[in-house]
Length: 247
Ligand SMILES: NC(=O)c1ccc[n+]([C@@H]2O[C@H](COP(=O)([O-])OP(=O)(O)OC[C@H]3O[C@@H](n4cnc5c(N)ncnc54)[C@H](OP(=O)(O)O)[C@@H]3O)[C@@H](O)[C@H]2O)c1
Image (cartoon, rainbow, N blue to C red; front, side):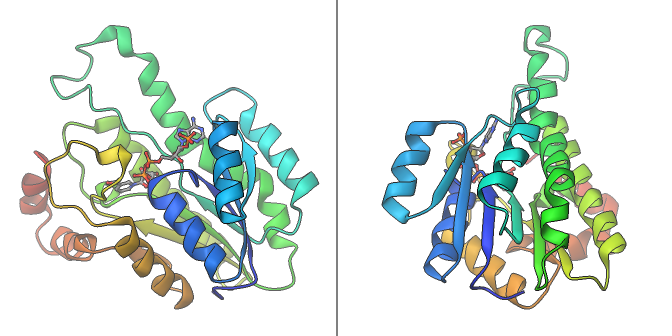
């Protein structure tokens, strides 16, 4: 996939991995449209980095449909969609279901991490597929899509779901102009992972590997330790699950 002259919509482009992708892709000569919830934050980033911006809370009913309409009206030229927005709740660390008052977070996590990216891809796919050049969908999942940890069962389920969605969509569009990528990062130093004790990659290192894989049409971009995890999971799945589950 070419690294310049694309028009790229990035959900989660206001922070962490998504913001670094937005910055780097803009610097390479792409039009970049970021999506996030706070208009103030979007305005500030748009001014600072010459991004375009659209506000949407992807967990709100009807929000994805409204976002897709805005994209079609204002940015019909887009040829790349990066689904990067995500949330992770860790309150299941005691036992799943121990905090019934927080049940709404289950649906929220599934909506933001899985339903919204699938629906957004569905709603703007016609914009991507009618282009004459290359176009792409990039879904940001996680190494946890391959091997889950017990403290975040819902998060791991959404990422495994996004992993299989990406694969099936890639099978469907094989050989067409629409390329389906998945980015599988390990633990990365962002607001999402604040306070975690594990070794972390920087967003810069993750985006270096993303850009390399994107340019080479490596459709499953396993970042850093996720390459090793993938191999370990194939060779010794039970031992790998055991090693990963308490992280
Ligand atoms: N950090 C890690 O260790 C790690 C590892 C593997 C995979 N990932 C994945 O990488 C992606 C980016 O994560 P990150 O670590 O960069 O997280 P982050 O810094 O916390 O950023 C999360 C992004 O998601 C957006 N977002 C969250 N809820 C939203 C909602 N309801 N509507 C619209 N946007 C929403 C946020 O935008 P606003 O707050 O501005 O609305 C923000 O831009 C996620 O999909 C995550 O699961 C992260």
